Image (cartoon, rainbow, N blue to C red; front, top):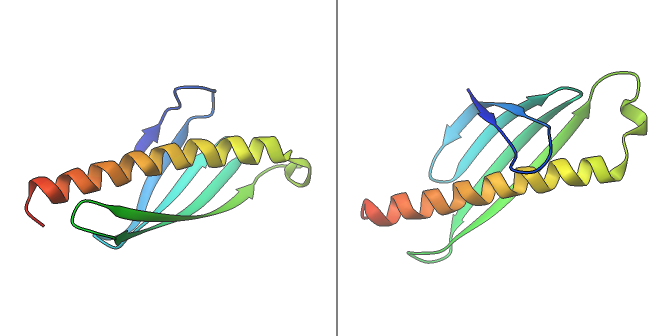
Length: 101
């Protein structure tokens, strides 16, 4: 478990690794006040130095206002998660390059 703290904004997520099938797939469960996100990240090697990241997110909004969550809130959560997943992709590429894979 670890915390995802945004550089911008206030929503802090508690992240749990649900499944780790590296180098191809990583599943996370993100929790924050008012929302849970199930994440599946798929990594596809394009070349020895480039990796394509495909991220699927399923949002579950909690509480009585879950039907009225604005698209801008969903977009902000998606953007923050995308930045974290891109950082992970860069980390994975560097690790594989440094360890000769």
